[in-house]
Amino acid sequence: MIDPARSTWKAVESYTIELAQLADGGFHVSLTATTVDEEEPQLLSQEIASERVVSLGDALAVIKNGVYRNKTVLAE
Image (cartoon, rainbow, N blue to C red):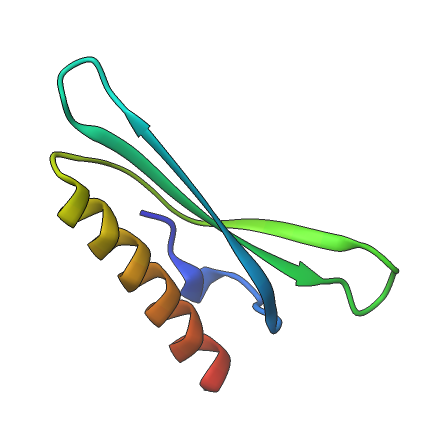
């Protein structure tokens, strides 16, 4: 998992979730945050999580934890 504490975070404009079913029946889930660059008129993407999981419930937990951790880092 990507460590959000090692990065400079800005207010998140949106999240992108990618979910793919794997040949073994598991899933790959990734979560990306999109922020606005304060110095130039552009959007920035930063990967928050990228994991292989065994169930959709686990995939939802990865998404929930990534969003929650990101909000916690922004609040500090």
